[in-house]
Image (cartoon, rainbow, N blue to C red; front, side, top):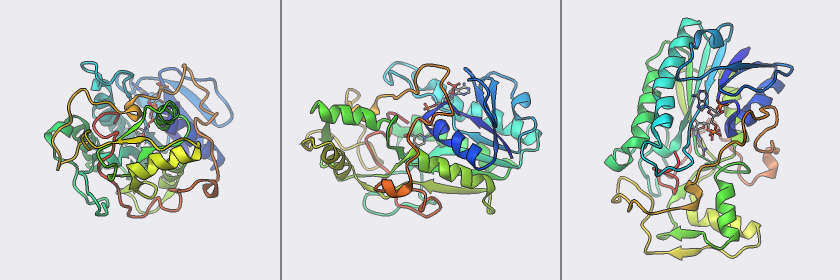
Length: 319
Ligand SMILES: NC(=O)c1ccc[n+]([C@@H]2O[C@H](COP(=O)([O-])OP(=O)(O)OC[C@H]3O[C@@H](n4cnc5c(N)ncnc54)[C@H](OP(=O)(O)O)[C@@H]3O)[C@@H](O)[C@H]2O)c1
């Protein structure tokens, strides 16, 4: 099928496009900075928020919305406005264009970090989103985005990805901090995170294009682990000392905790951009390693109900 990918130049998109091509699909890549054409790849100049989307969707059987706008300085006033617009206005525009064009399959990339912290309990796709007022600016646009998709007449999938991990993701910043011995683990570090490699996330996107049961929402995450275990393992892989614990620092935000002080920082919360534009979207941002070479692969687990640590250091800041 011909698949319109919005966000093809991003971390996820650059893992997704080669997989789509290998699967025999034709990719139309909507971008504000389109790259050159290649076999099976149709670059298409456009902006999800302002362009007439009808020409970009015309002739496509499927659409994937994987666009986002993580600000380089998350603390600037209005820094998250564009990201919110992509999730709300962008989704509304894309869904409308897809419906008008008779698109057969729509895949919406979402985030599992919108759940309320579940502590030690497993969270499946029926778990409630975090109602905390201090997380509303993150959670409410996600809720609206998913609602737009769910109330459409399309055959849709919503894929709630865990925190991306691997080269080209926020993990790079954490690794730098570990090497500089500036990384710390807030509170006990016993809260869960559920990382996912972008290549596994991309595999789930490809599967969702042809899977038979539609109008469904799935968590796409690797096995959950505590943040302390995660950073200690990363440090160990690099033969670095484990980062020091900071019991005085508040745990990440959750419905059970008060809002964090505004000045609190965490190295992984910094933005990872996908490089100078235009980027080569046929060169994956992350190596497409076989699942066996990674400790935890979401490929086998992609449509499994998975536990998601609702609270992690990125919640409320990066996403
Ligand atoms: N990063 C994570 O840990 C994580 C975890 C779970 C889920 N997700 C979700 O996964 C998706 C992809 O994230 P990512 O980290 O791969 O993003 P990214 O690397 O920051 O890439 C952002 C993409 O969005 C596109 N974009 C931004 N504004 C646009 C606009 N106005 N019109 C058209 N395209 C626009 C960019 O395309 P151009 O610049 O080429 O126009 C770029 O391809 C998002 O939905 C994100 O919420 C991310």
